[in-house]
Amino acid sequence: MEQKKKSHMRMKCVAVCMFLLATPGLVMASGYDFFTKDIVEPYGLYKKSLALTSKKSNQEKAVEIVQKFITSWDMLANKYAGDVPDKLSQTIDFDKKIKRPVAVGKEALAMLKAGEVKKAHSHLEEVRYSLWRMRVDAGIISLNDKINDFHEAMEIVLDGITEDSSTEHLQHLAHRYGDWLGIKWADVGNANESLSDKDAFAMVIKDGQNAITELIAILKNGDAAQAKKAGGMVKKNYKNIFFLPECS
Image 1: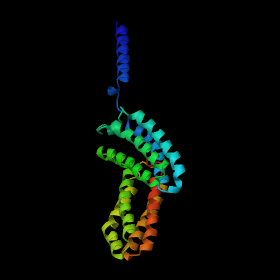
Image 2: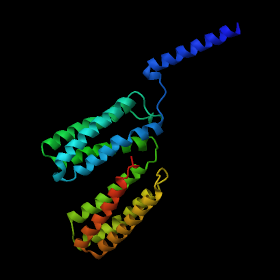
Image 3: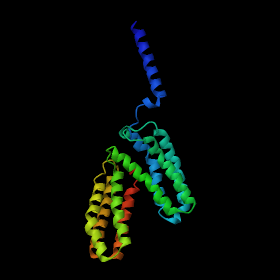
């Protein structure tokens, strides 16, 4: 009798498991840690796509990488559509949002083939903001989003230097945005818990902080030519962080 009960219980367990596997809506959500590992390759290709579309001379190579990005992201989207990672379970229309980068990639690819490299670059930026929005809404603290925060502050300052190089405006940029730029870079430096090579990361953070300090001092002096040069060093260190393999 006891053996029959055990056999019956095993059969019930097998039946329940088969039912769950056959019913997508009832399958347990994937772990977010698995998702962050699976996104490394497609997001890495996305970052390369952004880099290559920043210069018109890279058009041919950009087409190749964007095509790879589309294929890689499509695999990611197909894996997680209908199986939302647990920490993103509250995301509205997750299936549509995780698939959207594929459409963005295809649209950017068409722009590239038409010779509209700068337009393709701007279009690809949507992916960055979409992922950022999902993580913020889910309360997830991500190194990548700290990097995105800094990017926004940096662009305001660097665009400001280009738009108006008068001494008065450069000094305004220093007083209005200088501290903000430094704070956002410090935020990046404090979000290194998940990195394996902390020494390399710390070196870039230090170099970036020095570049920001120099830029702010130059802005206060109102030297437009030196400000553009110093701004280039700030951007270089931002790129060094953004393109770290682990920042995905």
